[in-house]
Image (tube, rainbow, N blue to C red):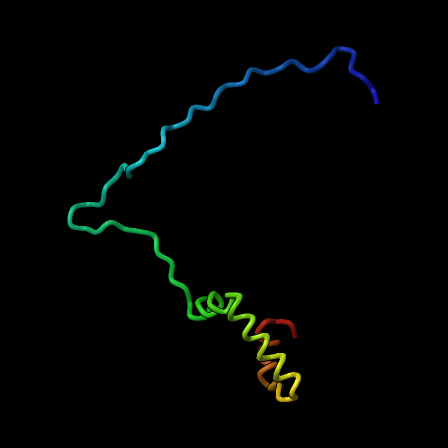
Length: 92
């Protein structure tokens, strides 16, 4: 490692960043006669189903039911459905 004999590079002055005050009310109101617009999210039925299935209680019940059906030999996989799901995911 070499040391620069001229010393460290000169420091540059730091300029403070001016910050705007936060607004507590919208600066533009909705035009007269029009309702105020809000953001909206629409979830698909599949997304709603996934959100419900993610609850720990629902998952625990499903796992318990699957374990019981595997243990008593009643668990069956539809090969056509399995093949379709694999193809749909692009894993084929």
